Length: 379
Image 1 (spheres, one colour):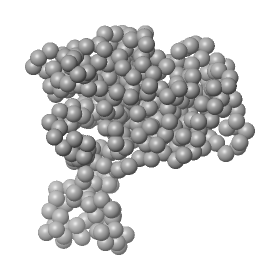
Image 2 (cartoon, helix red, strand yellow):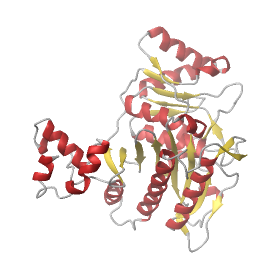
Image 3 (cartoon, helix red, strand yellow):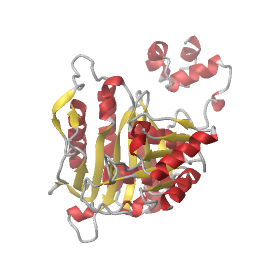
């Protein structure tokens, strides 16, 4: 601490944070500097990224906009920043769940359109994202897992984009502290349209952006605007998402497979065969959380495959195409992976035939893993 105080001429902000560093020992700007001193290394060795010049999500979005379309008006930037605000709100709510004065645990006493029991935090999350997106002034249509019908905005809140989202994926795990998250995808309205259902009942290849935010031990956001995948971690002291994974790339093969083996008796032959092959090889591990965001996040970082096949209980599959399958598939493809449906076809090209809550089987992850599943499905 005395070393930090001695160097306040260079880092005045340390005076503000020094007591916080003592109490929390988190890796804030000051914490990292103190750690550097303790390890007797120079500041230039602490990190390749300047710790006094963090690259925030907002800066990244603006940079992507400049690269793809220098003449853009910045509307997508405003929209994505609004989603970012909603994620920060949910991150705080999840971390404080169960604390006195923040009663968001337990069931809300209602069901969503899927017939699933809604948790109190499901309802909160849905309202938060509806409000921040409406106030952004950039949305024409919203589709949320929690409501049966699409939501259409009128002037002065109407914009040129449509957002599809699962406000709180994995909410059945809230009480036990398992990582949960928000999944979102963005379409641009069709030329000449002022916002119609047809603007969102389109295949995933038409999405202009997609991502998820995972709330757990840390709050992560993985996002793509069609030019690779970047990962951000929420710095609670800055109140900003800071770039921590600048160019996410899946390995061509991964040794982890993720699937709910409790449903094994209901699987199709191809899925059973693939899992049996993995077990017989003796080099693979099963990892399954039961929260899509958590399982896909691990797959995105470590490689392997995430599988949610159709089965006898869910003949079409269980996951929703618009706000679960497409966004995750877009991320995987942008990171060098593959995503297919239950027939071995590219899921991003498959339109939602049965409306905004249409379902599908999905297999996504490293190329070699998914290619093998594709071969088995084609037999």
